[in-house]
Image (cartoon, rainbow, N blue to C red; front, side, top):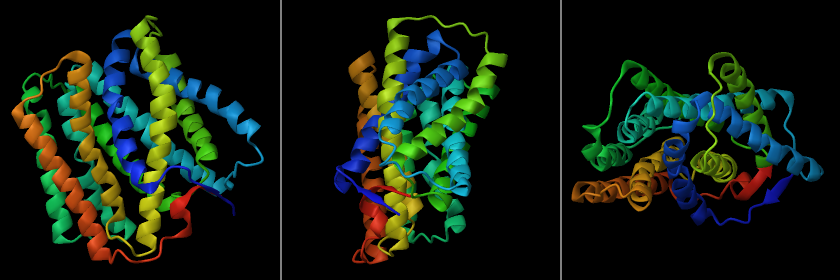
Length: 323
């Protein structure tokens, strides 16, 4: 097996991931009015493959491809993280549900991940549970002012819950069955799987009407380069490093620690909406941001402290790729 050295320091991976991931709702807001969600996402995944496949072909000697069994696991995780999660978010927004309510529903992910911790043989301590609940309260405070304006429909709620299920199941599945893989090969596998799932739906069910505008083009370009290539690669690194540290005994509840980062995305999304769309930030939202940050920090510190914080890091923790 070969490992490629990472050029991104560990301390920058999680913050950069949170910042980039938070732009997803902004991209959805720009793109949804001009294209059906399945059509937009199929275009997005297809463009990602157009960019990545030639790049991987050029670097073919350095790319480590997994075996067939591992390819299957990576593909399943990709469908859950890409197709199910993103389609749920986009469809919920399209059916009139406010971004604040969608963010709050998806914000339940760390709690669900903790409850499913038995699948990963992980055990949480009281301080970590306290951090999870504090973080969830902070998320609720951030989005509270916008919940009253959120349109709640049966279809929107179903899609929001499916998004929550997709990202929760995808994160757990990938961390359990395929935490280590070459990011370039893994990305090609995951986006191919997601494209093969969504493209037939877009062709068979969507009217195919696309209104090509500057906002749609910008949303697609941002989604391809920043979200699908940049943020997803960082998510893979976060999942892998959390798995490696748990395996090395340096943290407890590693999957929950990784998932808790999602608590921070509504706060960053609110800040971006304030800058881009002039959406107001209230004192309650600011207080919620502080509470969320305290909760996530407490989860991280509790995990490191309770796990000993001195175990030797597993080899894959500092690698960008391992086949």
